[in-house]
Length: 442
Ligand code: PA5
Image (cartoon, rainbow, N blue to C red; front, top):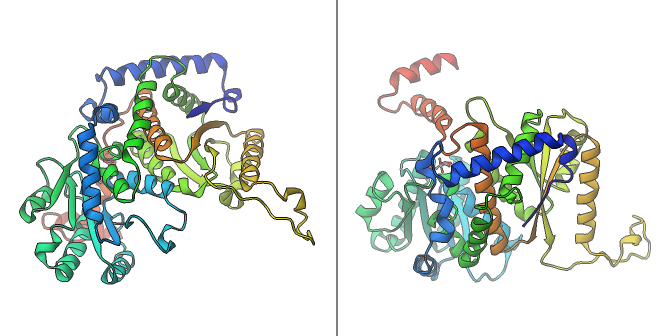
């Protein structure tokens, strides 16, 4: 992975950037020294290097067992218990995976990441015709959305397969001891994996939360971990060249120069959910005390035809971080056309990836000319190794950035407000008075 700040540096004074680099190094040492805010949630720092071959093996074996004779695995979870697995599986999968005539691994689909009746009814409709298994993930074990989805799936499984067989089709990933999901798993005899106490949801992709669904989808979790281990080593160094330090320093410098929105840009739709995962990581870690960069995302070149105008000429409060892929996996050249009505024969014989790269470079120059600083992050190709490194890189830079901002990057107190109102409006026992007050405001 390579980070290039050349197209962001002209937007800030040299000395200012040097100061931010210094602050980023201090934040790194606070993080590594485990003395800062939220230090009870720093287990993710050494997850890649501390996972053992036996643990990886146990996950692979469970993935194989869960996949035997199974067409669909439903992964239930929300937020950090969903986005990491979804991001990696989407990035590594065939773009039309669901339509492939033959798949080596079951199709992984997600539930409980919303409470849409349509979504879940349509999922159940599909499951009636298919042989399915389920991984249910909730660290707290009490989150409403996945709990509702799990009620539906459990009921469907028990009706279709019977109680005895259902327990072999379900794996639960939750807290070691606490929460309703742990109690239920023990009671029903489900196989379980533990989310460590010191790892928060959005930092949990390299625990069974991410690794088991990724292994079920047929991907190499050992290679993912290897990439992350290399990045763990590289980003532990107290050096200005540390890529996490560079990214955090530049983000902070731009934020304090009134660039309040960061847009993560990709040129490969496989990376769409990497952006969604990144949005949660940064949004939930930094957005507190009325501070923090607003994380947004675009898929180019698609969104150049929707958001391009704003990015080029709208409010100058944003900067872009381009997530670039050096080498695509396939080779496809543009055909020659005798008539050449579209006048594109000058491109015939050239690869689509060359056009995509020139679109990327052309856009970068245009946006910089339009007043949008650009940070450029390049991964060699989309595979398990590079994704493992990228995920850990973003996590590390997020911890550093949060400390530089002065917030606790590892809590999420603001998420509770909507839950309280939802329960009150649904007349949860104990919330009657709040419910009545809220209804008057509607
Ligand atoms: O990052 C977080 O902590 C959250 O996004 C949680 O992952 C999310 O709310 C789901 O929580 P749980 O795994 O407890 O169901």
